[in-house]
Amino acid sequence: MPKMTGGEALARSLYREGVRVIFGLPGVQLYHALDGLAQEPGVRFITTRHEQATAYMADGYARASGGIGTAMVVPGPGLQNASAAIGTAYSASSPVLVVAGQIQRELIGADRGMLHEINDQLDTIKPVTKWAHRILDPADIPAAVHEAFHQLKTGRPRPVEIEIPPETLEDMADVDLFEPEEYAPQAPSDDRIQQAARMIAGAKNPLLYAGGGAISANASEALVSLAEFLQSPVLMTAEGKGAVSDRHYLSLGGMNFRNDPYMKRMPDHDLVVLVGTRNAYPGFLSQKVIQIDIDPEEIGRNYDDTYGLVGDAKLTIEKLRDALSAISQPRESRRAEMDAARAEREESDPKLEPQHSLTRAVRNAVPDDGIVISGMTQIGYYSRVNYPVYEPRTYLTSSYYGNLGYAYPVALGAKVAQPDKAVVAISGDGGFMFASQEMATAVKYGINAVVVVFNDSAFGNVLRDQVTRFDGRSIGAELHNPDFMKLADAYGMRGVRVEDADPNQLESALKESLAIEAPTLLEVPVGMMPNPFT
Image (spheres, rainbow, N blue to C red):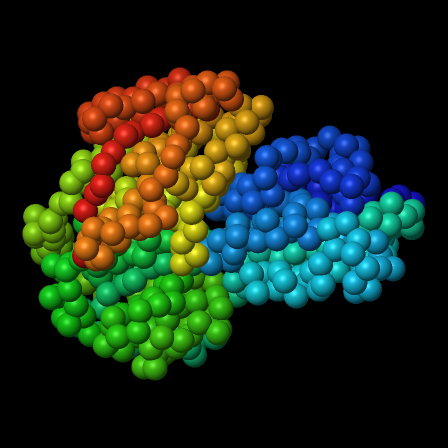
């Protein structure tokens, strides 16, 4: 066994497991980890300007690439600063590895007030991780890293954390490095598949409802095949957008926030097949439910009348499709019926302005395979329903975490993962200022993502709700912003202002920005917008 420091063992183990990019911030407890990485030229280290951005960028990297994102932070405040981003990855079922430092090994739990000390650090991060582990012996680092990747690659993909004290990273040891493993996807038993196939074959008008799990499992092709066999329309959650192209005649896109005209057709579906979504709205469905999910704890969480299929969504759908073929024939095309239903839905849905025109301007400017990150802002909210998506992994949300500040750093991570694709963050001025310092990261590393900042000088959703609900009173929601063009220039970043919130100007400016391929801030001054949720 070769002798090496714990930091060297960490770097070599990460490289063996496939890590090629780490988003991190250096600090005293990580010196020997960083020295190990300095000796591993196959791993690129991208320094962010805030710990929150390390995990946000790792999340964007993971979701855009279909691989695993990696973040590295110091202990205590470093890990806690990153925790909002780790929570976002947790809510979005995104596989992110977080490598955190620790205080001196012999002082863990002593409550002595050491630099960055927190009691107990593992407990603080467990609620937003799938698995968390502390390594005290340098010889144990390869096994722990290997187990972390086992957790990341099997079951439900969610963040994991390993933490290592500085002495463990510094100490020399005889180290046995592990070889990476690939893990075969798991499917339900043949009996469960056959029973589900009989239920679907017996349904007159099944509905498929796809969530982020369909994207994570790369199940789009299988899902389209099943939908076409059954001539079943496909509804998608915001996290599932792109699982079936919105150009496909069976795609219903996302359910509208307001009175969706398709709701009157919902009772016509006598069976709903949930694919990789918990559909966290009890009462939304009254039909019998078949739920396909990698996580057994999600089966029947929101619907008692649920038949569960626990397994990888892609493999499960493929087996289900084969089982259906053995007992039934493909159903007659419903293209004319579905075209009419889609047209009725489009025509009867009220279009909120200026959200609708601005959202369409972004869609017109972004290529089909371009990646859009919808921030927690008016256009971001509206896009969850009204932004058509044509390919998987091209529309990223913060899922149920709903946190401000995530959109821009997630976009930077996505661009690192997919440098040849257009990447656009949709942000408000409030959310953008949470992470505006990452413009420095974009410029330093040539990460050519575009952020579109819709600037209303307010936390716009809050301000509008306060004004409309409380007799015109508001508090805490109005903001003072910098001159965004001067701010972009100060960072050495390209800045463009679109005056009068003109959709045509926005489309033109965004197309130009994507063609130039430079880190760009596109500011769009806007006023108060109508509520997209009512």
